[in-house]
Length: 184
Image 1 (cartoon, rainbow, N blue to C red):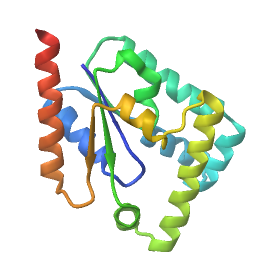
Image 2 (tube, helix red, strand yellow):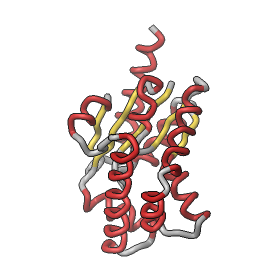
Image 3 (cartoon, rainbow, N blue to C red):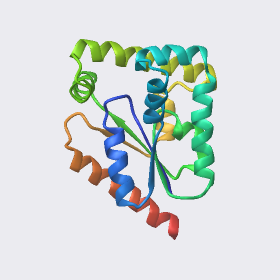
Image 4 (cartoon, one colour):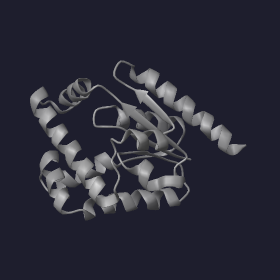
């Protein structure tokens, strides 16, 4: 089964996706972590690497082709990223969008990365806008388009006030229900 978790940075998608992957015995893969690893390899901040990626669109294309290839192996995967639901199309069985209040998202990431709120806010908003523009340029996909979101995601969960266990429970139940339905 192929499951996709999406959402803006700080919504909890990596944390939740990892936990759901464990529960359904699937392999977890994060395009965001792959992107961070590439930034580190180039000794660049995420904001700088995002700007660099605007001029080097092959970075996104390589990451996207990698997930398509992985999904085509027909193994069980849980992907975490902005584009997998759009890129994988029918290869994905269940797509979950996590959303969260911007202030809460920024606070979560600032705590995680040991940065000030303002520093994290600047870096995050620059990165998100850079990604959005790259995805529009590359694929004509606007990840913030409400109609597209409603058409591609099976479940949308607001993580602003829910605890991790509650979110994992909701998502796991939805994925397990879909898996039972697919087996019928």
